Amino acid sequence: MHRPSLSAGLLLAVILNIHSTSAQTSSPKRGLVSVPVGPASDERNWDRPGSSITWYYNYKAEPSQFYADKTQEEFGFVPMLWGATSGTDFYDSVTAQIKAGRNITHVLGFNEPDGPTQYGGSNILPSVAASVWVKNIEPLAALGVKLGLPGTTGGWGGVPWLQQFLGNCSQIVSAGLPEKKNCTYDFVNLHWYGNFEGLASHMGTYAAAFPNVTQWITEYALDNQDLQATQQFFNMSMEYFDRLESVGRYSYFGAFRSQYSNVGPNVVMLNNDGNLTDIGSWYLGGSATGIDPQSGTKVNVGARSGAGASAAVLVATWITVWVSTLL
Ligand SMILES: *[C@@H]1O[C@H](CO)[C@@H](O)[C@H](O)[C@H]1NC(C)=O
Ligand SMILES: *[C@@H]1O[C@H](CO)[C@@H](O)[C@H](O)[C@H]1NC(C)=O
Ligand SMILES: *[C@@H]1O[C@H](CO)[C@@H](O)[C@H](O)[C@H]1NC(C)=O
Ligand SMILES: *[C@@H]1O[C@H](CO)[C@@H](O)[C@H](O)[C@H]1NC(C)=O
Ligand SMILES: *[C@@H]1O[C@H](CO)[C@@H](O)[C@H](O)[C@H]1NC(C)=O
Ligand SMILES: *[C@@H]1O[C@H](CO)[C@@H](O)[C@H](O)[C@H]1NC(C)=O
Image 1 (cartoon, helix red, strand yellow):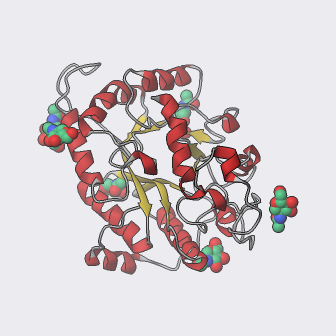
Image 2: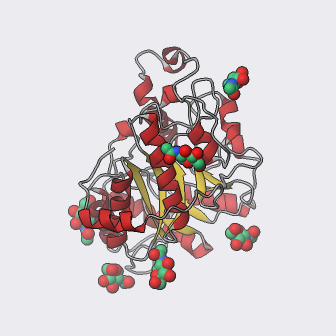
């Protein structure tokens, strides 16, 4: 939710780099941030036949019930260790899934460890995260699993947090590591809420801090803007990600109905009746539907989630509540 000030040099580089190539309709990079806050039927949109979405994550170690029957080739699951855990449950879960035949190729580190829990962040000290990583994530590298660094917020604090985390990691001699050894990783994991220039600048900041490391953009949207600007951002960013070799994968934040959005009503892929919006349809590789994100009938959120819950914070709240069962 933060907007670092824009680097003019980077902005210029980005503008000069923009070509008028037509948007790609499908991409092996394209993924789903699974946030099942509406009716279960909504979730069937994302893995429908012909969908351009090839992988998903759900902030958890284990696949969603909705996609449990899908093989990795059909709809690839990427486990995430959301927050700190005292034991080795994440490692145990991933290795058990691999043993059971699920071809897990990538895992994601902590969710927004530099961010507060009321916005879905896991708020972990770098030193704590390092000890959890060494026990749960680092050993997966030996099994050929690619490791994603913790997915920091779009704020300025992400890079310093990661540097402290890596510094702490290299101080640890324990649990499976025979000697002091740096933690390893295969890709960095970014979040961004804001405009396109800010996104490109943020990616530039991470490219400078982690040179020649593949980037995954695992939450992004232009939040709280009108529909035209929101769609323009959506188009530009997806075209950019599809084109850049340094972007390994991306997953747009908006796979839910408008009424549940905590990032503004227009980012979403579904209206309040569960119909695909233009963005929803484009993300799946289809054409515009003309459905206004804010159209349709809102359900009584208070009745669903308990008195006092505001629709505006529902998504973040749900993420926090439902991953807290992991802790
Ligand atoms: C797992 O998936 C990767 C990437 O798609 C593939 O290269 C590899 O051969 C697969 N491994 C197994 C055991 O199916
Ligand atoms: C470890 O992390 C702490 C913050 O949790 C930081 O103050 C310290 O500098 C880090 N240590 C190293 C060696 O980077
Ligand atoms: C750990 O990383 C630091 C910083 O990149 C580097 O200077 C150091 O040599 C590395 N240590 C080991 C044991 O690889
Ligand atoms: C890393 O550098 C090589 C050689 O310049 C380049 O081909 C590759 O695309 C770069 N990878 C990333 C992730 O930037
Ligand atoms: C976004 O791209 C679609 C085609 O994928 C196009 O129809 C639409 O006009 C574009 N919208 C904006 C605002 O650029
Ligand atoms: C929107 O969804 C509702 C409920 O599933 C359905 O009855 C309606 O036909 C859909 N409208 C459009 C325009 O797709």
